[in-house]
Image (cartoon, rainbow over all chains, first blue to last red; front, top):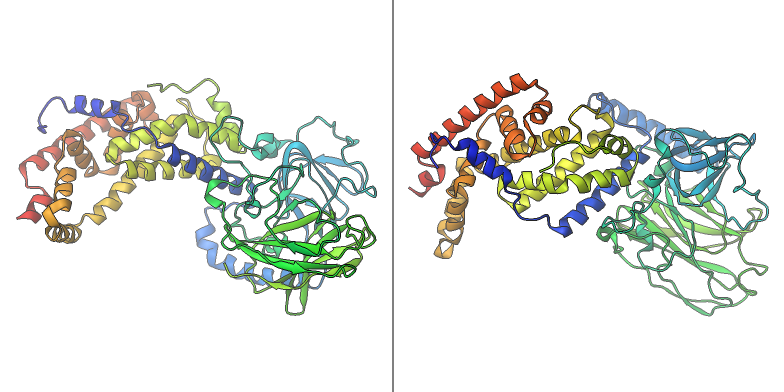
Length: 371
Length: 201
């Protein structure tokens, strides 16, 4: 074409009418998944970077280190000085210790005794732990406890609270129930919440789970200590087993196609002696900077529900002589949890507990695996 | 091509701030248009995909600060796209410095049957669309945006003006200057040997 031609605008118009090749569906799906993941991160970030962030980055980094050390020390001495904070919520009711019921909302501080009830289409992120639809949890001693709804010691959390009608949606940005929902039927998009720990497939028999946001870039001291946890109840181990192979447990959420394969896989054969309850713990590095913990309970003489059967598990992180509770799972059927990789060199252990939190037996200690 | 904001788009954009499904719907609505626009400007599927991805990522990051304006979501999104295209061409420009071109030419000479050489020639001295793309990329960012938004994004004059943050008359002036500048760039392209030709000599 000549530069002086009068048809420059015509050429531009023609060029503007050319749609080119169709969008590659693989690319479209991959980008969709990536955007959904990024959106989730954005929604679950309690703090946003301000325009001053670049200027104050150095100062903030120093402050964060100091605060982090303090919080770390407190947490690792078993203290409960750290506050549990809700960072995102949709279709979630919070029952405060005084029995006041309020809608879950980002930034809500949750004192000990607070109960969190996630609606059937909702989701909440508390202290880095994402509670899936129908999940129930309580705040106890400064950390979150995932509740087994079958626990008779707990009140009926499903009952509507005195202050908020049961059908009332939470206000503000947390009101969108679809923010916590998987993509709509027919959509090519990947599920909203991912759980890389459960890539082994399986059914959604649990009906509730706590899952970790795919990544978190927020400086969150409690998260850095390992409270960001992904949990999935699994079927109880067979009663009185003699040989048990650990394997990825059943899935409660679907993993997007980009993060389906663990970096390493755990495959340990454990030979046990009946009558000596034990937990064999393995730690596996999984994508997105996480560590999946799988454990096998064995040697329970009477099987699940028997005398030695745990009512739940407490996961602890250990660094030197410091110990921190990562999360308590009030379900004796739980066999896996995924946590964010901790910055420090730590080890983990799982403690089987009874209904009162008493220690029944303890797992081996495993070091946090290399990424 | 539909350019009017859809009736429910304002609600959808509001929802998309906190609702991933709503953002997904926006994504599905605009993906073909953004991809097509990026392809028009680059003529490359890979580049179009890179630009498309960066557009939606930038939109996601910017959504909390986005304020609805008459004309809808499209002008805002295409402004982001225009900026991403300009950034892409800047990067490409750096890659195509004289030194870079000499290196590529050397590669071409050492390649049997001149396979890379032919490919380069096809890219740099191709059809009218390629000439326009290259000439466009040589304009100032402001002029690139004006032409992009008016002719290549599917926006009408009013929407393109909004996307530029200008009133329609002011946009018309900028667009006129942009077209004049584009003509000059095309003239230069025709009267002077291209960088590729210089390299070949």
